[in-house]
Picture 1 (cartoon, one colour):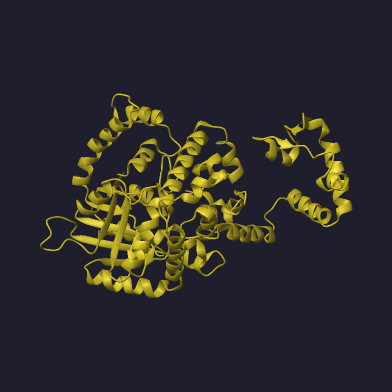
Picture 2 (cartoon, one colour):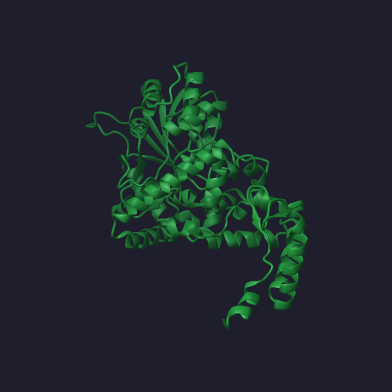
Length: 464
């Protein structure tokens, strides 16, 4: 999933594009729906506090919860596997699929994280994404651009052209007809698949249960039609009890899509029993670390409390401008700017924490109150201390620091800046700056420094 170009290079290709506009429209609609859904919930603030306490308590007791979940899931008939990293997770899944030729897959961010599809395909196993958005990205040879809406960056006209090209159907941009084409194509996949692979929204330690939250029936078909179900569980996605799970479910859909509850909330506790008419004969749970232990031991451990609702992406002005692809990794937006460097290391992701205005909107909308801006500042400090910032920025910040603490020096700097900006200004606005500063004016205008500072204006007018 990694890309060699830094954030600025990827973002420059998207700013002002059709993709960026599509992401902005979709994200704004999600944010509006979330606001309306929470407005009808009088206990929203209390629910947020309870959800935060639950998730932080789960992280603090993660070893105990995972041990209890393993015991209960095993007692229910599941086989539980532990994977230390992506390679081990891929090997485990490949071993479970020995002899398989077709796999039906439900939406799973952790599978994107470990690169599971490409690994299985290299072994000759045909992997078919069955979530509508993921199916579209797979047809397009693309990657998801949003945690809950993989094709937020595409218009329905683009999807219509893609279906006509890849599926050989008549062009249409009618969502109902596009959905019908998908159902007709995928129905046979569910029935013929040797195994189904899914993610897990939550694991319940007390009962060994898996909870999947979806808005499409594919999740239930993937986990019940094939004879083998493999569930990929990021090790932090666990709570102690059903009471705790209920609180998370109460806030998840509202924050994600503005629904009171997702269309499908599927609970899986072990494989099919003798009296059950359907379901898999085998259920395997692969619990994946892949850097999470390191994150848990560091200053950004709280990011693991994330419930993957995507609300922070939708409200973030940077994400709405550059979209998920600008981040170059499966986890985008504010949560990704913290999580990705933690899971994958700072190289080449050290610049993601700078993809933020630090406006604090992400923390404000987070249903579990994750302090994302604080962690972004920590990661920025870390990058600076490691000497990753360009020299011109370090010099500029030192100059700014010296000037900002001395009023007389600051006044001289402001007058100098106004004088030097004159050739670049039109009617009080700077349209284009030279050198590294051109990044500020590449897609927006910058106000020219005022002739009179506020302090000077105040001294002149305060007696008026």
